[in-house]
Length: 540
Image (tube, rainbow, N blue to C red; front, side, top):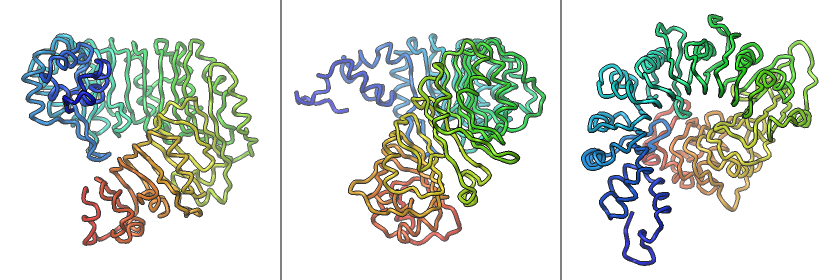
């Protein structure tokens, strides 16, 4: 930030409220390093107790979607540890620190008011060493920390059993712990399982837990009484399939007040596993469901069934947020499926609030031409119901019948259809999903309308583009800077054949600008690297 003597541009003329908003937009380490001691007024603002209450000692740069970097420069770290931390340590209540700077930050000085600790981007082996051998961290966790967030690096994901061991160790070590966020980050791919674990996860203080697990058995394990004081449980299940039957799924969970269940792969076990679990939560006040379900010889899940299956058992429920996708299979009987109007009428009860819905009917001919992420031929139809405004970061199976709307929470979008996505359709997508970061297109149909728009379509935040299972026309549209503007794109997944075709064997100037910014390229299919390949992708 430049401080100018020009009266028209002097940053010191801004009120304190605006300066603090600017500071909050910048990495905190940059503010502490660059602005402290610049002026007396800046010192007062930077050292404001409300500003430094939450000390963030990370500075994330996105080298690629798979390789974010959180560490700060050694010179910056050295100055802050020597000159800043001794001045603010008694005012720090929350601390965010990454692996490479944690020892210096925690060993430099005591933090008598610290109660919330976020450990970011740790390798599991290193984290285990700290938990078992670092006296400073162990004392802090044992005596002070009530809120803990753990973010482990997933470049080489730890085994689910290893994560279970780490989680159990945390619970045994943290005597004051109230809330744990254990690897519950949307951008990570780590899961925990207690199936083969010999450790016991017990806590008499934990009231809030957010965690990713491997199986539905793991969910039942956490709700079998060993965490009896839990009030809030947010859980992602990698796959909801059969259970081992070792944990009782009928015992009431009277203390639980807030429950969130997310599972992205389709499951056949909604009625057999999920409904019995939810009926155990008799005092629930908030329920969040994000599920994709397959039903055989049965109608869609709608408002009436949700009430009969779940809500009638939860008299204290005052907040219900959901996104439920139901795909129907007819095997033995022909089903009279509800229309979209029927679905909407079923949600007339006040407890649901505004609800969106969409019904798709599929032909066997179209289904036979589908692929693994499309709707297979045995699916007769699909219905998606969701609370409005849409609360979730993911939106799956979007097709050409999408009418638009504002989905400004969505960061991950999967598009699939048996009909081509025409170029103008992506204008609707870019406007409806303004903060989209990850786009997956599954469509092998060529576009029919290839007329170029006079203005390019802008995806301002798109980082990751998946075109492995898309026709080459979509690569041509997205990689040409005359058709799409992708200022943040870093990762591309595509077949080598499509990439070579669109770039004209890596000579096409229309796709050069977008290609030159890529830092990660995943190519499907065999190839021999041509001579001009690295010149075309200089950032790889």
